[in-house]
Every structure is written in structure tokens, then in C-alpha cells.
Image 1 (tube, rainbow, N blue to C red):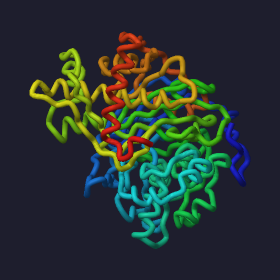
Image 2 (image 1 turned 45 degrees about the horizontal axis):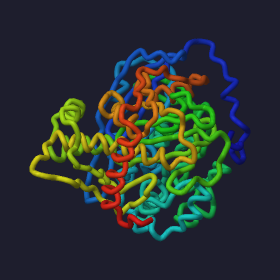
Image 3 (image 1 turned 60 degrees about the horizontal axis):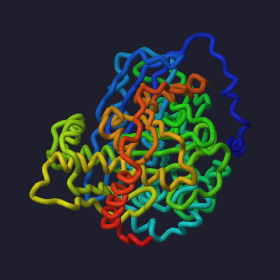
Image 4 (image 1 turned 180 degrees about the vertical axis):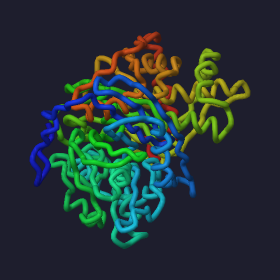
Length: 474
């Protein structure tokens, strides 16, 4: 287990008992929308609400949210539900700075996909960052975003990731906190101590006065108000760590893949907080540590086909279109629309479609996009020190049978799809309820391609991704 946080006694949350059944509002605040699940303390789902969240793209490579629109999406998704406890899971790394006196954001939130600090990241000592934080110097993480915002704005400021912003709003500015899983994604925390690191704060010009207090994911946070109702705030974790917990991955070697705007593979490593293998990340889990591979663009590629190109009307159309052709006929889509994450960490890479011919149809392009999602996850699994026996899968895209079968084929591993796709929210609810979680498996996909066929597909993908990278020899 992670060490006790400096200056604090170890949380007693695991020994708390509750005199009445809880009704937990599990808020899953994501990149393109907010989902709310109404869950009891047996983790049974009673109601769901969802609200879209717009993204804003003021310049090439810039991705922003309006922090007030984030809060409004939570209110809309929770409308009409009755609850006494609020749990929070959230898009990680997205960076918000607000004025402590007014509670108003001083600038748009800089989203985790944003690339504006790529040049600054190239100046950083990669080995220092890897050893201290378990991360890599990439615009994905919060530190360079915060450095950029503090250079542009001054005053009595507070910084937070989305969890901190929501807790601030819930408590009327009385609490400024974050949990260990979100803090570990800022590039400002020593992973072994799980505390803000003075050397890193000095490197990025961050004063401790702007930072939230770090608590454990299962801690009792405090009391707040939502939709006129007084609530307990308990159970906070970054979305991928919440999904790991929700999938019941509590022992070393157990891993999951979540398919959303990006795709994220996490494998529990117990109390191992050592520097990760190159290409992967080490991060705080809700109950220990985990190795992580972060694919920056997966579902976002399908969204781009829909909204940017008009190739499809709905994301759900992709399964039938992809299955309607026997192959991509040599077409590969490398969706480096926000650079490449694990295991390449190439912020300068850009998206590319290769192998086009007069025979290429939108079905081939859609199939290439779905296969790209599966290939990128396979790239991460191939980079792990030890491959898991199976991958537990969750997230909205697991409803796509073509994608899940391609994933099993390229991995040459079984893919176990959770019966409840929203394991991220259930993981936060489990933390709030003070219990473990293990979502039942709904469907298992076994490899249908031979090992030789899978190897040929993977080799063709490797050639395509090499073309998109800024330095394919690294």
C-alpha cells in the first residue's frame, strides 16, 4: 500500500460503518460529457443521467473546456435523482485555475489532450521526471499546463484537476482538495511519498499556496450541497484508477483496458512504486500502484470521422460498416490527432491515413479506425514487462463487437467485457461505499485469427505508425 501521507494519520475509511443504506450519486465527469449513476451501497444501479460537454478548439493543438460548463453538465446529469452521498471520478490531467475570492475560473480549462506546451516538455529532464513521478515529460500532464496558466494570470489563485474543481463547487469554496490518484498525474508529486515535491514545484514555478490538499481515494472528504440537497462527499479517484478498482483489479498482475475518448490500459502492481519501464507510466491506484499505458486518441478518432469528416452519422454505425468489408485493403489510419501516447510518447506525431486507392470506401476507412484503436491497445500490452492472462474491458466502445473481436485477435488474448460498461462510475461508488468491487463479465472474445495472421497485421500497423512518428528510430 502507498505510504501514509506526510503530516496526516492513515485514513480510517476502511473501518467506517454506515447505519443506513447509502444512495450514492457517482459522478463520472468525462472529456465529452458527464454521466451520473445512482447506486446503492450494494452497487446496484437505480438510475442514470447524462449531459454532453462541449470541447473548444481555439487554435490548432489547443483543447479547452469552460469550467462552468463542466459544472453545469454535472447539474444536468444529476437532475431528478435522490441521494445522500456523492462520489467523484473524472477526466484526469485537465487543468483549471480559479480565483479563491470569487470562485471564478481565470481562464478556460486546459484539457489533457492539449498540446500547447509540447516545446516546454522537450526541454525537461525525462529521467528526473520518470524516476520522481513515474510519468514522462509530455503536454498530457498538468504541470506544464499549470506553469503556462500561472505565467498568464496572477492573484490569489487555486489550481485543481476536475475533481478539485467539483469539490470546490460542491462545498462553496470551503474545501480545496484532490486525491492521490489525480495528484499523481500532475507531474508535481513524488510517487513514493505521494506528496507535492519541492524540486518539481521549483522547476515549474508553482507555489504550494495554489495547490490542493492531497487525500486518499476512500477518505471522507466532507459535506457539500448539490441541487439543494446536503450530501457527504466520499470516494474520489481519477477515471482510469476508478475503472481499475471497479473491475476488481486489486492484486498485482490484474489489468483492464478502458475504451473512451482515449484508451487506457492499467495493470495493478501492488506496492511497487519504482520507476516504470520506458514507454509506460507508473501511477497511484486507489489501493496501491499501477503501470499504465495511455492511448490519447481512440474513441476521439471515431468522433472525428463523424464530426470532422461526416463519414458516419453515428458512432454506432461503425460496427456494421467495418464488418461489411473483408479487410481494410491495406488502408491504415494512425489517429495521432493529439500526438502519440504510450509507448511512443511523441507529441510531434500527427495523424495519417495510408494505403488509399480508388477502391477505398468509407467502410474501409471506418474499419481502419476501429482496428487502429485495437492496435494501439496492443502496442501498450506488448510493452508490459509481463502480459496478463486476459484483458478486462470496459467503456462505451466495448459495445462494438467488431472492435472487441479485433482486440482479441491482435492481442492473441481473451478480452473479457464487463457486463456493466460504466465501471468507472461503479469504482467511485465502491470507494464511497467502503467496499471492494468486481463487475461481472458479460461477454468473452477469444482470438479468431491465427498467430501468424495476427503477426502480419501487427507488422503492417508498425510500418504505418513509423511513418507518423517524428523519429521512428527511437
